[in-house]
Image (tube, rainbow, N blue to C red; front, side, top):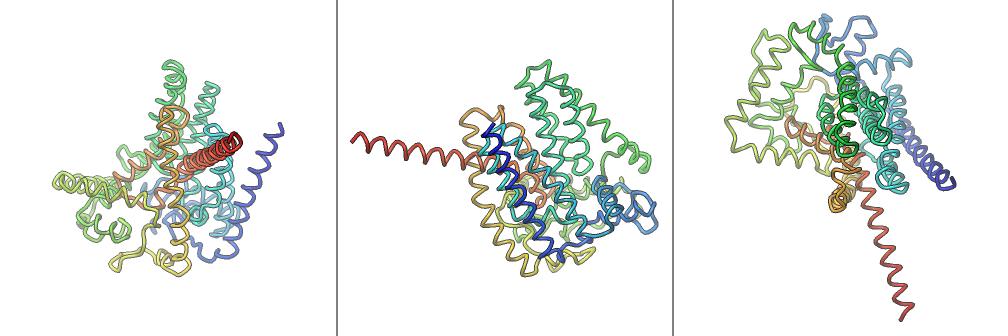
Length: 431
């Protein structure tokens, strides 16, 4: 009981400090937060004004972006007004939930010290301090993803269909934010098979899949009705695929620019519907890949390096960029340039430690054991953005799970140091 109370007290202190750090950022740098940093604000404004889910001036419905964050923003606007500061404060609450769920996950893997370290590394992580307060879906998605992974551990411990349904809900709602989460479902079901046996894992996996489908089904039905053809979460997959697979994307990524700013894409044919545009973009990307098979290894290597680079990417905005708004230009200001140095200093050692933690896990035969859900997240995010196009923001939902492995490595190195010190003292005493 005393140990549990000490752990809870320390965990509470770390989370309070993380919240204070975020509040301090709002006070000092709140002026850098803007509603124009993403396209979700247009959707949210139209939703609260009764025009439905659309970003267009004539209010015709569309399916370009996954819907959850726009509805989240609309709820914040209704409750607290249309303010980037209000959004940031609500997303601080999301971060608190994330840290609590991450603590529960990390403690199951490495014990109390690993949990406290993982929460501290995530809570004080400079990049998420900024990113999760900005008007984008990162904080919400990380919270849902972390809750879903925590629920997967609870299924292993309880073999409960209720917890399997909880996982289905969390992953289903997360898929309405970033559809890549669907790739986690078979990996989680496979892990349950390893942990619970085939029959029990099949039943819990079936519950998870059915609930997941039930969560996304209303939006799929809405999109299919709007588009006149079967349409899943969003229609931006085609454009994202083309932005990440074209003749000049490698050069852009190597210079440190974002793939969304490439200027070598073929002009879109006129008078295409939303789904036809998506299909046309997809066809352009696949045609490029088929006709440039020799370039694919270099393309994948550059994407991988960009995704997992310790440097904050994109580095700058190209002079040829065709920007819908100028909000991204603030990221070239001195404050953000200083933040790039801080990120490099903070993330680089944790990336190395995370790799060491993964190696220790492999050596201990735990790749299909208690750590499988964590490296599954790392794998899914890596595969998704090797297929599409990478940046630091797209990788960031994987970072808290990487930091669990970093914390494990720190604990292992500390224990190794202690054991060597004890061994040295014992040898000295005998001599």
